[in-house]
Image 1: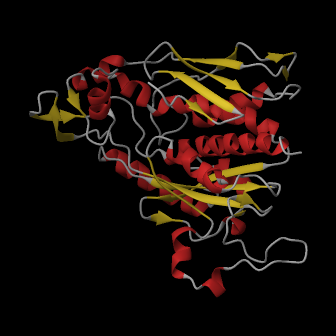
Image 2: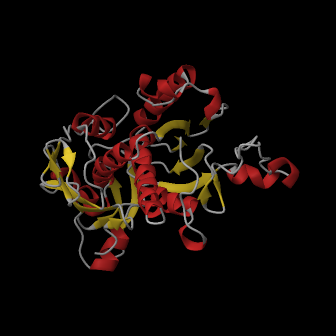
Amino acid sequence: MAGNSFGKLFTLTTYGESHGPALGGVIDGCPSGIELDLDAIQQELDRRKPGQSSIVTQRKEPDVVQFHSGIFEGKTTGTSIGFVIENTNQKSHDYTHIKDSYRPSHADYVYDQKYGFRDYRGGGRSSARETACRVVAGAVAKQMLKGMEFYAYVSGVGALKLDKTYNELDLTQIESNIVRCPDAAMAATMETYIKEVRGKGDTVGGVVTCVIKNVPVGLGEPVFDKLHAELGKAMLSINAVKGFEYGSGFEGCTMLGSEHNDAFNTDGTTKTNNSGGVQGGISNGMDIYFNVAFKPVATLIQEYETIDKEGKVVVMHGKGRHDPCVVPRAVPIVEAMAALVLADFFLRNKMYN
């Protein structure tokens, strides 16, 4: 299986399955001498871990990261940073009913067709549990990118959408509620709705908005390695993501050029930021902001029809512990992948200076 590594200079390679003994990763390219706050890295993992609230999967995993290399006396050595996150609360018997059948909108069928064999326990390698490794690497990247600030938050759940821009919100309030929406009234409405959906054995999707502040001018490369293109790839590599838009996004299609153009101030900043902090694939010093769309979780705790390995129609009933809505736990994953992209381009930029 290829495709287990991300990045060119600041790279992450991950390994492990949802119900295997452990997950882990190797971070390469991190410069030496970076002082790491290991507690802060663990806090990022705690934001993603299962069982943290009443509206997420109740799988109880401590998700404690153990670093095995690349760090000495609290600082990076410049060598590979290896880490492990042990699985401690697998219930593999919850998945025996899908051993010979395929869950709709999951990776079950395509994995079986591609590899001729699959780990059906929790989806194996296709499980979103793999994203724990991304959060660890992203937390390291954040500490390398001193001064840059990453704020992701839930801006939509189903048809419920915030009608405020990030500039109208207090982003310090993202962690003040279990939905991770920085608007208290909307967060309460979203929480109630997620619980209603869960009570029906169903699921719902949503949108995570991400804002990156204090990005220097010049990150990104022309043509194929544009900054927004790499951010798009990073976000679309996250499980359940169905869409990515940055800056004005699809709404920009409804505007006239005279409305959409970002006029300059004399210091090089712009009066508006429809470009989303990226022009010509290169950061322009303004805030980078984008939206990431997540589909409803495919596993339903209700009866539905599907097919088995022989192509026969069978009736299945979802089992196991699953998120009724992934977006609250996706917030730190979006931040992490954004940090990995910025860290990679930061190192590429240093090659020219």
